[in-house]
Image (cartoon, rainbow, N blue to C red; front, top):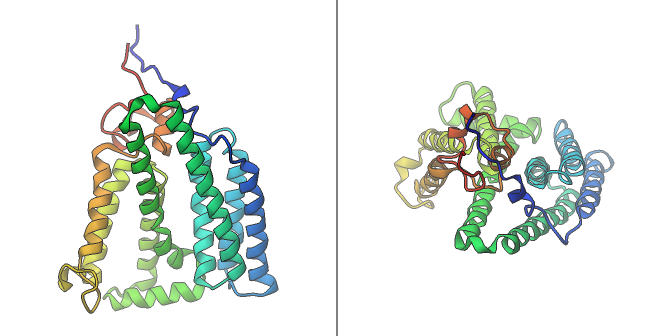
Length: 291
């Protein structure tokens, strides 16, 4: 008789909001799309392909929120939050007040859904003690730091031609002759960190990759040459970059936890066995021992 893990899918039943209706998010995202269109075509503040970034990414966020979130809240929440935050960041880069105002409302609804889901899980599995609360502490910090990368890669990949040219000149100033190519590579690396750490996909692999990326970026940014304190002149010391390196590398220890794509895929038996070491160090507590 073959030995197979007994997957406890019902452990994810509480990972959804109880009181905040999903239609609030859908309606607010629709309003945000209109605000981005207004700032792109009626009062054209958002330029060239940044228009596609704002309007298109909000459409993607809305589509995922409507089609995925009611069935699989964890996957839908994380997968719709990332494109929405990119759109919000691009609107902020170009100073679109309608885009920023509508996006702020959308974000508050995302936050309310997250808190509602967290409280539901606490009530359902309160017997798990403080370790259950620790899962949510880790998830909150992980999502914030992972999606913090949006502020870096959005100006490289999604904010339009002028922003891309500016970043190319910055990279040339670092001594990199092919500035434009390096901007694309750096932006894609930061996007991968947002997906891997922020959304929790292959998180252990993403954590070590993110730490290595920050070490390399630190070297080109010359922060190691400026001492420890971040506000040291001229470019700042290595205090903040080392904080990021340690934080990202820490996910190599255990992975992302259950509020993640890794957690959902493993709990539902959809993560290939050979990829599991890149997600978690041991069998998660929501998968029972083999019998």
